[in-house]
Image 1 (cartoon, rainbow, N blue to C red):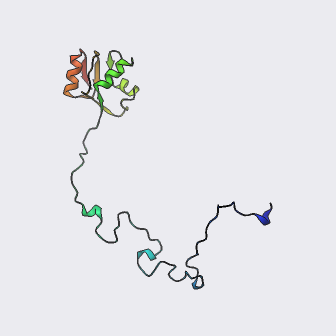
Image 2: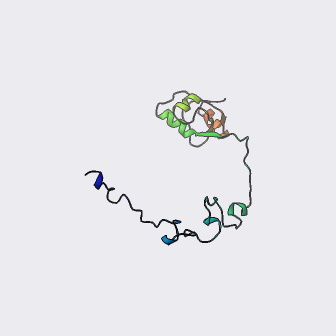
Image 3: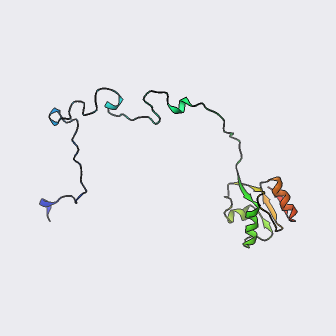
Length: 150
């Protein structure tokens, strides 16, 4: 093999397209197979997202509704059965605070935590969180524990 007989690998080159816009003799000169006039015949044409050919687009036909409350507080919900699972696995014994929840990946350090009332809690725990539902608070206190709001 030398420079006189180099050729690309088999199957790597497959461009047999006719070169458009290269003179009348090519058979694809003039309008370069783009037809006459209109947006698609121009250079730099790109269809806008949602463009429907001038018809009123769907996102403008459909009415708007609702609103987003910019002051909404999002809470990471943690259920009682999850807390009981921590106790069963020996990860906590008597207190569950925010750092414990972060260490066990039930919340991230920037989240606020709300204890929810699904499942049942048998262990006596002192639970510290940002919020509690009424059923969760009642269940923690019924098990002999304490619910402390941050």
